[in-house]
Length: 260
Ligand SMILES: Nc1ncnc2c1ncn2[C@@H]1O[C@H](COP(=O)(O)OP(=O)(O)O)[C@@H](O)[C@H]1O
Ligand SMILES: [Mg+2]
Image (tube, rainbow, N blue to C red; front, side, top):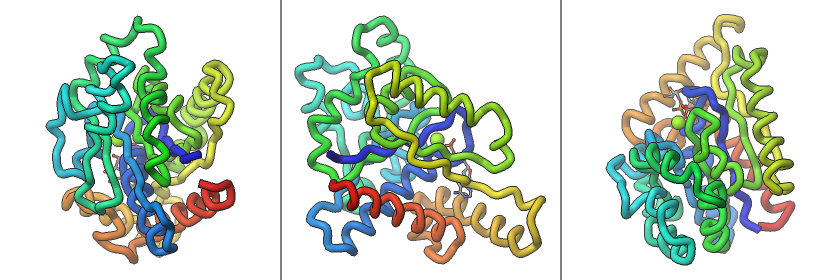
């Protein structure tokens, strides 16, 4: 079974898109270096803002015929074929493929609200092409909307990025309850919480060295975004790149242990 990692937290700016894109690229790289027969990774962008799509493909103008929107609005009989047709190769790596988001996804939520089986409109076609990929990484929007539900239902592993100062708030608890609700309420027993990913450290409560590391990692991420590059390409030695590399190592070991 192809594992599908969903990055989710209803709070914005916690690092979902940064993590989804870099983890996707990271898995491809680790698998290729390990000589895996399949190192293809599919990044699925379910956020209408399309940040993950923009940084990995250089475009954010996908629409009715060439984005996730097309998959969601296709006849169910054609949905898997539509999905396959919409996938594009990222500009980062030939093995990192992207199912792009579109601003039209905003309207899709309303259009599908009363359609029976709507929450499965991503999971069902995705499961038909999943075998082509070694792993799938799903980015979600900052809300518990229908599209986020679709992402969770299509996933096997949820990763929750959080900022450390946010840990104590009710936010994390509600993300975890939402994941549990999907697992129990939507007959999706395989969905598990794979990890809480601390994306930004609060430099104010740490020493100066940490502060420096922190500033470096933060600016690396924003510069990388600015240049439409992954953090690995922008600066492989930066703390954020090392942290993502370490996380990717853990995820790939877990995939290997359980059989891909
Ligand atoms: N791992 C990280 N380390 C440092 N800064 C990060 C990290 N992830 C994200 N950021 C910063 O936070 C901002 C928001 O990240 P983003 O991935 O767009 O969040 P989200 O998708 O949750 O809204 C980025 O522009 C970047 O500056
Ligand atoms: Mg985002």
